[in-house]
Length: 147
Image (cartoon, rainbow, N blue to C red; front, side, top):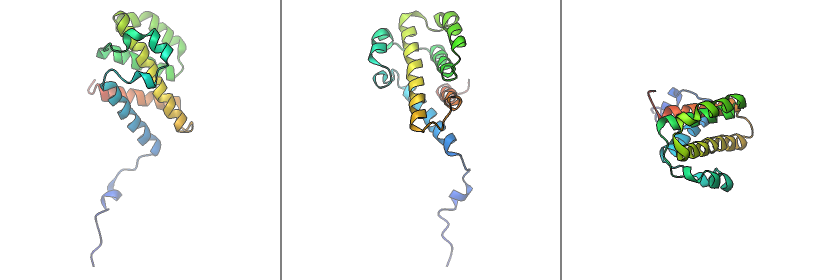
């Protein structure tokens, strides 16, 4: 009687820690959510913030604007407040042209950080903020491959 070999491929698979697998799937989901512009603001952004940045709810951000928003989100996850303040004062007016793009950028930063912190909460704090920042960077790589 010959041995059943249909499950042999499982032995050849590379092992991946659960944390890495989870962060990779999260980055893929975040990238998909950002590709389908505008993202679903309502479930991640409080109504008062949506009202304040209403001009940005339908404004499309160019690649540079999305990249800048993701950078700010990573810095926020790393709690680098001084660097965020400096970037917002010096770079934001150049990266987000006009009120609508600036509003969309602020909403995008909030959406990404909220998604990350929701994941951290659901993972019972087994994910660090640095892990989440790496996942945001991975999502950016998936959004804009080759750059």
